[in-house]
Image (tube, rainbow, N blue to C red):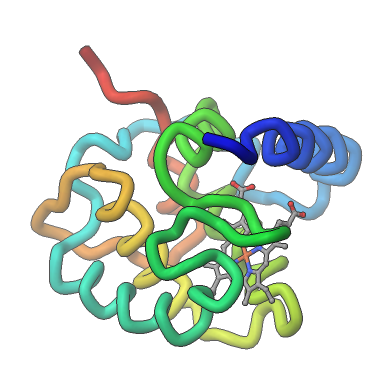
Length: 150
Ligand code: HEC
């Protein structure tokens, strides 16, 4: 990956900026996780809806294949998992809702953000399951993000 260095710098920056400002911002951060992203936490139908929404709202900057753009981060592969590891889907959801799309954050409904997340998870090969990912921060905060178990 040719752009891994600037991406890493951006992640580290984001991490420190987040650490400095996260207390009131992220209600999801404090909760213990009880489920895992590897348990099948969204459905294929939901990811399919999310794919269409992604192509409409996010592709312009993050790329059709989610590999990122000139300034936007890649949303696929190790980059995503390692950056959000030890975190929860709730934190990712809140972060996304508060900052994306970059020019009009928060313009989408919570359901749309959840559907787009389902698509990101499918693209990252987290398994689909029986239940949709609900746009409920408290519940999402219980789902931990971690590297694939052996
Ligand atoms: C106008 C361009 C633009 C659009 C549209 C956009 N993004 Fe972004 N996005 C960015 C940039 C630039 C960054 C890197 C910002 C940073 O590191 O502070 C980013 C970062 C992110 C991150 C954090 C990635 C990480 O691992 O650090 C996520 C998640 C994300 N975007 C999701 C989305 C989603 C979902 C959409 C569609 C709803 C979207 N973005 C639309 C420009 C955009």
